[in-house]
Length: 182
Image (cartoon, rainbow, N blue to C red; front, top):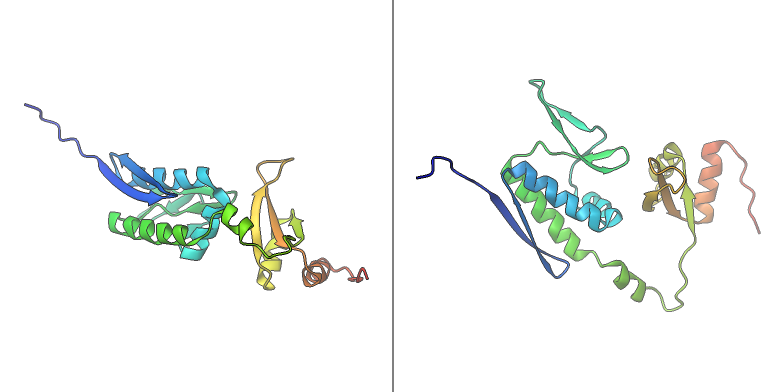
């Protein structure tokens, strides 16, 4: 006769034409494994889907409750974490929102084959300064994606579609006079 009760929580998802099964002794452990899978699979797409689905993120690695208890948030990208202080029902809602948005988003290979007929890709502009990137976003420019800085992996590079308006705004923010290259 066994005195110990073993409980395991199991979640099964259909993702990327594969069945993803997450098993852990705690709901929080399942939640961490869920995000770990997607961050390792494609961090840029994961960030994009999190923003699209409206999943809450934090700028702090810890969540501090009113009673003073602390919980670690899940690291997403430099300076950004996913909230972990959710009850099991809220976690399931996050799973559903994220998975449905993930399935709607085309894969990178699909995007390449569905691009315009000329096959030309728009020019991209890398921004290495976070505050400048945030100012550009506030001015209405869309962030194309982010990537790790090759020279210093603890920093992110913010990538925008290169347009004359983007260049004008960069100059305006930095207090430089814009000279059209034509």
